[in-house]
Length: 260
Image 1 (cartoon, rainbow, N blue to C red):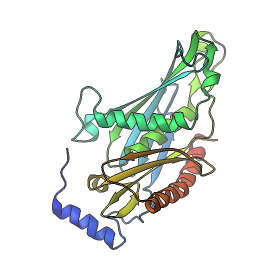
Image 2: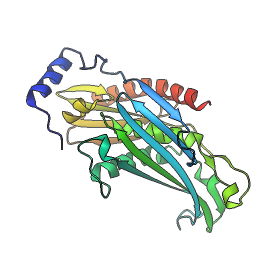
Image 3: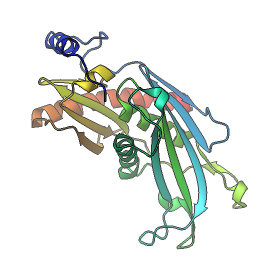
Image 4: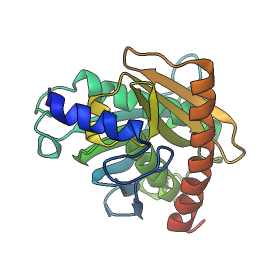
């Protein structure tokens, strides 16, 4: 675990009290975002997303399998995240760590709860065969805010994915049945100051974290609270407003990059 020197922490906090951030951004401003779809030819869908110096790759693979007993006419989605050791000195090889599991869970929840994928359309034979979607997320470079980078990479990969029907002799390949994607925006709080899209240094001193996924209409589709600190009602409203404004901008960029 990275331990930040007190002098550096004091510098970030004192700067924030003056209304400034180390990289010059406003409190409610994201870093530059780059979205690159279709970077892996062997995957059904893929994308690389950069938010500042944080870099994430997502890939989609699909297979045919059995549905869950309680949803015999619905396809299945599963999400996994890998924190590659070269991305950060804190990441180690081996079984998924707690933070990798949390990252996968947050991304999965944002997609699942907002019903981005029309899982009913992924049924081949009720109770017998459905399409199974595997979302694999790989962290290539870590400089804060993995939740938003991973979510955006997963959404981009899904939007470019093709159902490999021909490979399974089930007709022609076709796009995944998708609805409007929600955009994940993460804010953190330290010393009663709230900022969006935290860099790694800002994350290290954060007392509370709130991730909000908003759709094109500005409606909240998922929320995830993290760390031990808390937010007041007014602070939550502030986070939601900043998430809505940034979410709209990011969604426009997403559609522009995937050509939709």
